[in-house]
Amino acid sequence: MTPYSTTTTPASTTPASTAPAGTTAPARFLLLGDSHAGPVGRAAQEAGIPFRGGPIGAGRDFFAEFFDVRAGDRDEGGAGDDIVFRKPEADRHYRRFLDELGIPALGALTVPLVSTLGFSAHFVATAENWQVYRVRDGFPPGFLSGRLFDGVVLSMSRGALAFYRHVRRLGLRTLAVMPPQRVPGHADPEVFRAAQDTLRRALLPLGVEIVDLRERATDSTGVQRPELCEPDDTIHGNLAFGRMILADLLARGL
Image (cartoon, rainbow, N blue to C red; front, top):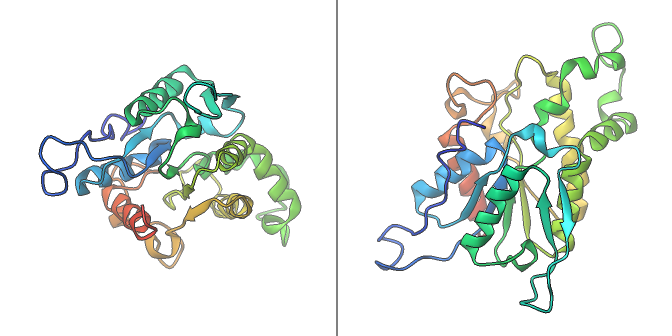
């Protein structure tokens, strides 16, 4: 799994300073994601913000089709539509989160959904996949902002797009968190940056709120600042980055 997958199990209660002793504070959001959800969960735990959820799989698992729609039984509790993750481990985590929230299906969720699914752009940006589009040492002018590029990225991200379309059809307030601006050696930095913008443009018309901290978290070259990076790691943000994301979520009213 991921560096944070074993450290983001949600706290069942808030600290005594924010909830009466012996009570369980209601969750303020459901967190579903890949490893990039880890720092968000850790920051929420540290701050005593009650939530449910965390990472349910690796980033590569959430691009092509990764879930199926399952209708809930509206005659027994009005649960509405649900989803089933195709990877058994991901679905087990998801079912546990629903149980902890006391709901039978995603359609019954009454708190916002915070998700990192589909935003591990380094998988889309694998350099060898884009070599065919290069001319000498670079891409043709306008390629990274053009329709062909958008079409390829959205095709590769079709599972994530379907997920966000579905949760919005369920009427869920949905916030998608953009990833740390860290590009591992196998990925093309230009594609990495442009692919995020393509997905962002596709999600905004659906009513998905985008948590985009790029201007605040990067240096003048667009790379994640070292103090916001997980050490000895080429991909993840650290707890300080998670705190920035959490602060943004709280400012939005979560």
